[in-house]
Amino acid sequence: MAYLTFNEYKDLGFLRITDADTFSKYEAAAETQIDITTQFFYNADYAAHSLVDDLAGTQWQAFRAKQFKRVVALQCDYFDEVGADTPIGIANQDLSSIEIGRTHVQANSNVNATNFGKTGLAIGVVAILAQIGLMSRAVSYR
Image (tube, rainbow, N blue to C red; front, side, top):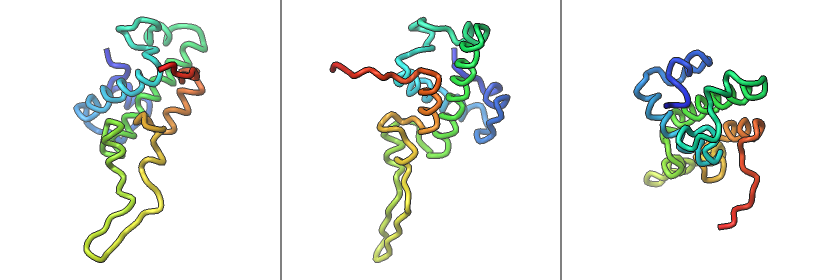
């Protein structure tokens, strides 16, 4: 089951993605990147927490679940805006400098400034995940 449907995306007020097929592609990619970052918090296969149950749960659980859905929508918009849906694809979108013949054009910013580390997640997405307690703060032992 997808974390977010196209109708939910539109109901949240997001308008950037206009067709369901594009949304489905980005939503699946967003799920993967968000699951990795949140250690599969709402993943149905892992079954540690239920997004559906949390939406009907306590005030805090419902808030967290609604923000989680907003995170998925934001990540889908981010993928659509940068034109890629993987961390490597996003890194390859960096066109901050290009040279054609003797002409050199350089921008003042790059797409990596909007990407959290090498996760492929937008900075705003990570900020919300951190605020609702879904960012890991542990030190990896590997």
